[in-house]
Image (tube, rainbow, N blue to C red; front, side):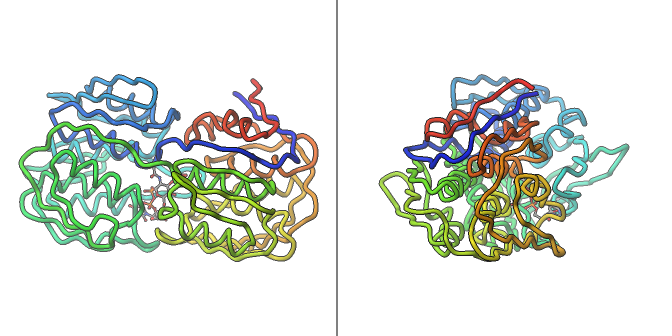
Length: 420
Ligand code: EPZ
């Protein structure tokens, strides 16, 4: 296993180019199963989750070839229908093959994903939506066994107790593209990754209206064709670099960053006293460490993303005053807190809120990554701690960040990857 060794205290300066969005790449790669034609997808990040999705698609019979950030997928004519536990336990997003397999081949056997570090992560809404479309679903020995004659369009309310579901919206939307009649998904997730997947499906010939709104309409078509598509830049990577720049009192141009995908985040950074500027082809985060304590409560898009809650918290550990970060979406997404406390942060947890009392100094120490975004928070904290911080188990980071240490190093950070 590798670890990062970081020497803190260097303001990040310069320019960083974002990679493509992991959370758009995964569903879009899976959706290629819906066509017989070849799909060429560009802007795919070089992260382990994408490689895992490629292995699943190959296991299902697809032919896949990568060339830098470009992947070519020729889907199977007669696929293997099973996404086994050994794949799904590595990456929950394997469930994205469920909707396309059902729609195209009328059957699928996908392992239930189980929980992960941040929560129980149920898939009941995915299954509810597919059943509403006419799919028979049984759970047998930990597997989702799904079959159908023909999917029929339906008006489906898909939000759950925590609001809209990105995964369920995408799975049902993908499946509905090949159903008869029209499907309306009410309570749909509005994330940019949902819109990107809808745009990919439309590029294949699907008829989808109002993706990005809570009411998505899908008019079923007989078949979809192969297409060539470019993934949107990763807004969570953009936010991660924005918080790193603000935390280190730096000046960073985030190339590829789209202001329209980050309004709630940039709004909070401005409230904290950080200077944000739209520049040609990106966003500039500059002029001064965050000065003012803020309160953040995560919410489904366009609210503040849960995937940036930990990174914001890392920045707030050195902002004078009391800040409060509230996690409303996942039940266990404060795994970074005990590790930040090891670096000297003053954080207490009350229910689903973390109360952060800004400190003048953090002291470098060995810390351990636990999940993808908590790990990014530890890296940011290491950049602003005095002395040396080592972040172990960075395989968590490699799942969703492409060459993070290289990108940070190019901005002046003293960070290196070391085999543990
Ligand atoms: C996606 O997960 C992202 N993952 C997550 O990013 C992100 O945190 C999440 O959306 C919320 O934005 C990918 O896109 C691969 P949800 P997803 O369904 O689709 C509950 C990262 O760090 N729920 O929107 O699994 C669920 O428990 C990852 O890149 C149900 O109750 O999230 C949660 O409380 C982490 N039943 C809420 O809905 C369901 O069937 C939102 O989950 C599905 C979800």
